[in-house]
Length: 249
Image (cartoon, rainbow, N blue to C red; front, side):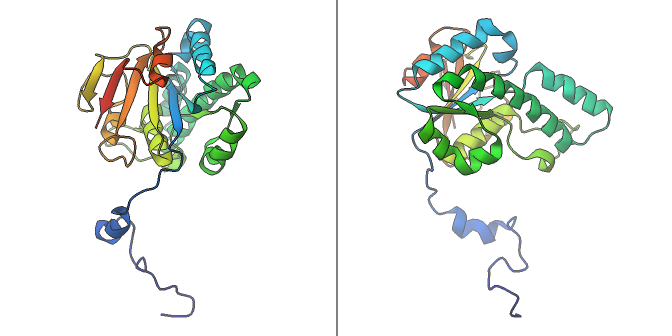
């Protein structure tokens, strides 16, 4: 070993080696923001429906600001489908399609942040969420960002086709788990069957991958789905009331 080398178990190894990372992976993981509530507003389900759906949800969020600190994530909606359709016609790879969709989700995030601006809420990009979320939440009651995970051009290639597998629902689970959030609530245009159901339940109004991620998550072992078109459902979920569908690992 030369003077330019650093003694390390990673020398000539890879983090894909399960045996190599097992000692570190087996250690307890600290919750970074154990008081955080993550609320996901569906792009197609809520935001694309316009003021009739969006404004009541915004008012329900605003009403809880004195009691909760929130990370509000937005989905992409119908514009992302159009953008990805054009991207597929142009032969763009999966990573580029993911970035196109994330841009549409970001536009929805700016819209929601503008509606909550008078409360001190701003939109922040993923980089700022990763490094400065706590500081922004000290300054205000909530932060808005988009729900797409920041894989970008490094998005995993799917087994079939080119569409990115990590979309808003999966990204929200990953972000909530990374911060050790207290609660994860999906606001959709339907709540599913209601009650407490296992993640293996089919027909839920969330991506299948979001359900699968509960099995490997460190902190987020359940999430709740509420009908954002039903006034008061989100308020009840944030008040720890049994509403909508609770999906557990």
